[in-house]
Amino acid sequence: MIVIAKRGWVAGQFCGPLRLEVVQGRLVGFRAAEAGETGDLEVGFAGPALTDLQVNGAGGVMLNSRPDAEGIAHIIRTLRLRGTGWAMPTLITCEPERLTRAVDAAIEAFGMEGFVGLHIEGPHINPAKRGTHQAQFIRPFDDRTMTDLQRLRARDIPVMLTLAPECVPLPVIQELAQMGVVVSGGHSMADAAQTRAALAAGLRCFTHLYNAMPAMTSRAPNLLGAAIASEAYAGIILDGHHVDFTMAQIACQARPLPDRMFMVSDAMATIGGPDHFELYGQTIRLKDGALVNAEGALAGAHTDLVHCLRNAVTRMGMTVETAYRMAALVPRDAMGLARPDLAAGLPVAELLLLDDQLQHVTV
Image (cartoon, rainbow, N blue to C red; front, side, top):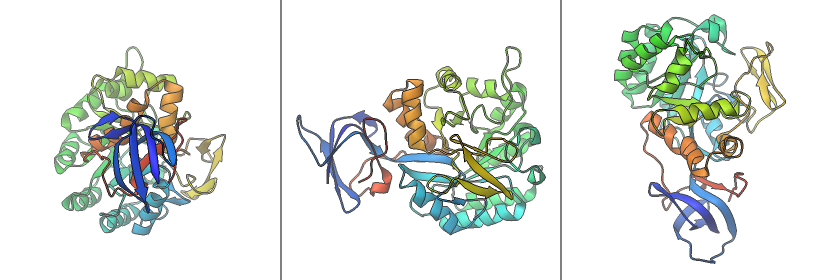
């Protein structure tokens, strides 16, 4: 199949138009398209697939419910049909035994196509900002979590740990950062001073900006204001339910350095799956495009990164290039992963094709 793309990401830059040849599920070659050249398929954009650092589940499976290698594989297979080529399955606050099982699964699964590490969200968070996380499993940082993180890092497995910086001692944050753990602030009531101290200790990211953190005011920037003003990375959910698009614009435009904001889906089992699932013994249901628990709180997102990218362009006025960087390149920068590129032999699961309406196109 010959694909003509109006724009694309090649060799570290945007260019176009491109002519791509796909044979038996792989990209076998590409070059600049000549004027007037046509193909079997014409698209608006082509580039390496997206990278999602916060995926709780997909295809009817939650990592919390199935913390094993096949659970990881199922989630990633589902996402790779939807334009996300690489992902970090995410385990939210749970009992210690389940966390250890997820770490065992990550060690077993590492090397699997599309699996780039584990995101552990909680359990060392502030109960006042727990969101859908189960209160009974929230606990102070302990040796067991440290041991599990050491096991991951001993095998060079990328890991992000979301914690509330006011709930974890600064020397622990410093030790984690020195181990190579990407420490991310979230589910927190930290004020600006506490946040800045954590940044100085090694905190280098923030989890789903705006959500599960105190609002900033004219006299109290709190964690949110300190995050936006910092040079750290920050993930944000652009599904239209978690953050108002105007507020998302403000955060993106206010960052002091470029390429510090990245999109996450916070996807749950309903992506590529049924309209409900079980979490902590509760049924989480899809209602008006949002996922809510029995308490009426948002419980993750029913979205994927292609949808978030499209929202950034159509609802926030971003260029396709900027939105693509936020969904494909900056997440990898945040984790210290090499940026992907088009190359002969690339499987179609790692190739992103978007039409002129920024809908995912499969070949």
